[in-house]
Amino acid sequence: MQCLSDRMKILDVWVDPVDMEQALDRVQSFVDYGTRPHAVFAVNPEKNFSVPKDPVLHDIFRSADLLIPDGIGVVLAARFLHGVRMTRVPGVELMERICRMASCRGYGIFLYGAKEAVNDKASRVLQERYPGLVVAGRSNGYVAERDMPALIHRINASGAQILFLALGSPRQEKWFASHAASLTHIRVCQGIGGTLDTIAGTVRRAPRLWCDCNAEWFYRLLKEPSRIRRQRVLPLFALRLMGELLSEAMKPRRVPAASRGM
Ligand code: UDP
Picture 1 (cartoon, rainbow, N blue to C red):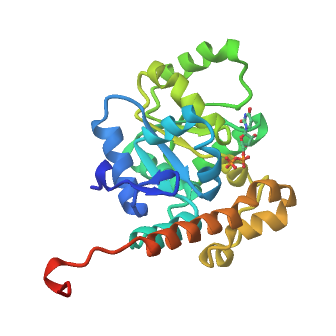
Picture 2 (cartoon, rainbow, N blue to C red; picture 1 turned 180 degrees about the vertical axis):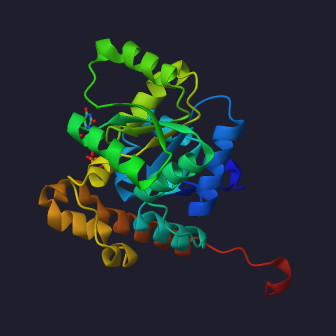
């Protein structure tokens, strides 16, 4: 199993160099041996710009238990900056693999986030897709702050070990930081952003070919042009990466003493 010391820094955020199977192993051991909620968050180029701007959020990411390489930009950056070959672990695929594992191992899940109809539909779709999956509870993502203690009570009373937070980023990461200490049974909390919309079918995921070509981000941009504001960070990310590589290349190299000239 990977340990936290393998965690690597990609410009201003961190990522754990895990593949899908290693990520699942980590999740399983969090559930089987953990004694507290463990945070599983996704890292992509967008986060490289949004997270460091907010010191609290930066700290939340730094102390997460598993940071998955969700975006292709992060995978490429790891290769160029650290010479490490990683594959993407898309959050949406990890979530579905966790659901399959939960249905086989009898872990209960709780779905918190998205609009009521989306949350309800996604819950039914998941139960059809993974027979035996226990959706121990669910809630839409529009709970007022004054009703939060009641929601926490419902999550705890459900007995679920896995909580999927579908509130979008950074809302879901901040929710985890504020409420993790009150979660008595939850052992894994995965931030899944808009994944329930994809599962419910209100938002279409890119066809397989686009995903295989690592062009899922471009497909989403074509479908939702309003995302341009968020995705304009992609060329900035590439520029920063090039800058970092250039400054590495320009650093004077130490020549071993034996090979130095007289
Ligand atoms: N959402 C929510 N509560 C809120 C705001 C947003 O549950 O107060 C949900 C929203 O309905 C959507 C998801 O959070 O399902 C955000 O999806 P988006 O694709 O923006 O998130 P990302 O994956 O980009 O973080």
